[in-house]
Length: 170
Image (cartoon, rainbow, N blue to C red; front, side, top):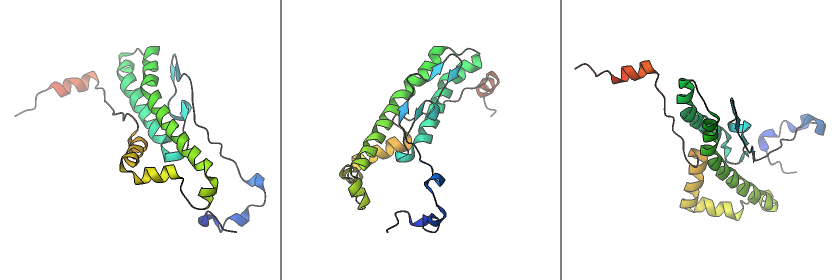
């Protein structure tokens, strides 16, 4: 029998029963609403990602960046409205939908060609993407930077703002 995962070859004899294994359930889903008064869910709590592309942590970090940008000033001022929480979801929901859609396409492509994958062949759609610079670059950008990359906009405390306004000594 050909072993598909050679680095496990010296460990497979340890398994005596299927009860010693576990099944990883992979779901790609999203909550309809990520917030309620006093609560905002981000990352896996709001939307689970497939392991395809390994972007779950990147999406979660972007959620956190957008939440910081939107909510930071409101938290400093001491009043966060439900509409502020909704703004975070509005800013992040479409990028998450796009990445999840791409993950579903890649996963469906891999699952539809199980005989090809077993024979060591990559599905046609993925080969075309890998050989077409534009398609390859788009996929790399989406998985590496996100659909609409978020940049942290730090908010200054009143004391920091005062210091930043002091002219430098000459």
